Length: 177
Image (cartoon, rainbow, N blue to C red):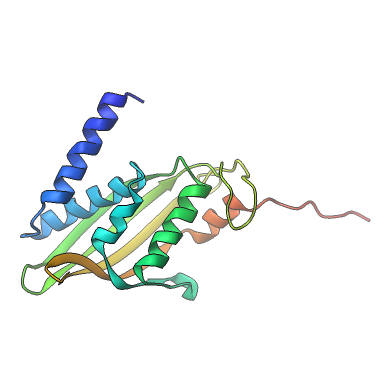
């Protein structure tokens, strides 16, 4: 990767994230695409605190909800550790709402990466998230002003959890009799 292009892209996205006023839905969509890439592509995980309310609830499939910004931070670090090269590609993102009532936005993301780091399932497997099926994530977020700053206050998310877990799990050979 060209380091100059990488730094230019990072600086452009961080600048937009820091200066965006969220006056129209299109700015919300652009902000959260840039914000997501700032965290995942440039590993600026601390920015989670800038955009999630302290008491955020992330409603996830299967009842594995996250409650509080600390859990969001920890969950992100665990996935980054397991897939250090994880890339998120936006398929689509849209937003609606206004400055007075807040905004809702939805996004569809394609995940790509290889399990080269330790996870809750053990040592790295070397498996790709794209082995077999496409790995997708869908989410909808509610954005409101909290103490004068725009923050995600609730999120509903589903993703290819089985594909992510399969990439992190080593298959144990069955004993033959």
